Image (tube, rainbow, N blue to C red; front, top):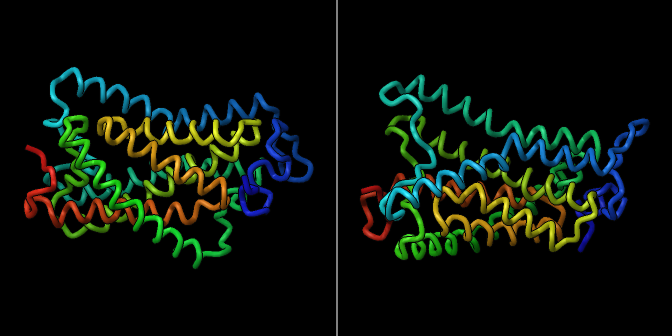
Length: 280
């Protein structure tokens, strides 16, 4: 595997990831393996790991309720129906709350592990990151839609409603902000932070990649088996790209574009095309 971070001290800050503790700044005590493991579990416990537990419970609830295809998984819903300004305030507060774990992951890496450079968010190669991310989105987006439709028609997936927001002026901006928040939170934590930390803990590339992909699939399980397996596949691709290139920038761009097209496209197409599953 190419050094994560493109030689910028990523994925172990030069320690090769053979189980040695992460190095901090000069004068800081390096973290022990136990401290690194505790940090990973705690961060996942207040973010996407806990989301995976809730998603599993919700999926069990859907399966035991009846045929899952007739049930709805709503991604962006209203918090205060009939009160658009209160709803907007709650939407923005929710977006801020959801992105804070990613900021915490970057902060933890800045103390021990290389900071933004460790995951390729150091501002270098922005143009290349955007172009590569757009190419990834173009390649993955259509495949993801196709997998969802196959899973839905097979009865293995809930009907996914990307937007349940009211038809107000801020609906599209909030959906775009939600797409960006999803991308930043997931790619920074699941592709960047987690793979860096697992490498520092001495995990092999394949084992770490599998763990990252399964985590990504777990918190999408509330959508059904299609959502789970589709995101496991996406996690394998995105994780492998991070291991090869050491940059989450292209992954954030790709993820943002994929979600933005899904969210806004749903608003524009729902009820207007016959092939798009809609809530009954």
